[in-house]
Length: 102
Image 1 (cartoon, helix red, strand yellow):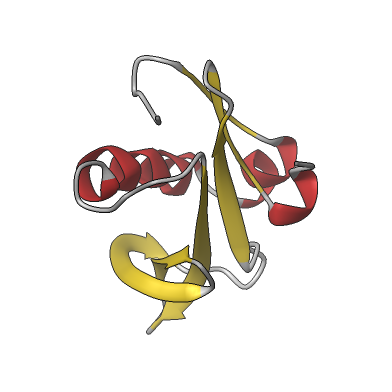
Image 2 (spheres, rainbow, N blue to C red; image 1 turned 45 degrees about the horizontal axis):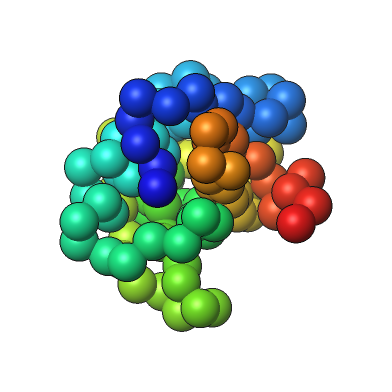
């Protein structure tokens, strides 16, 4: 699950609201901070949080906060409140929860 060698995408709403670096940071967190540390399903949820003007990612599992990852990127109120990352087995996509129809 979430193999970095598989195809990775971001939805239009994500690309149009988050800077490229913030999107790339989601993949970095999955590859370097979550894999092998937490049991992952094929659907990962992050809340995007304003941490003193900086963007932080709250990793949510089972409606509970599991970990927070700070970033060097400024927070913007136009960012979505949350995002999901879905792995279909051959493709992975970052999207808003309303865009994923499972």
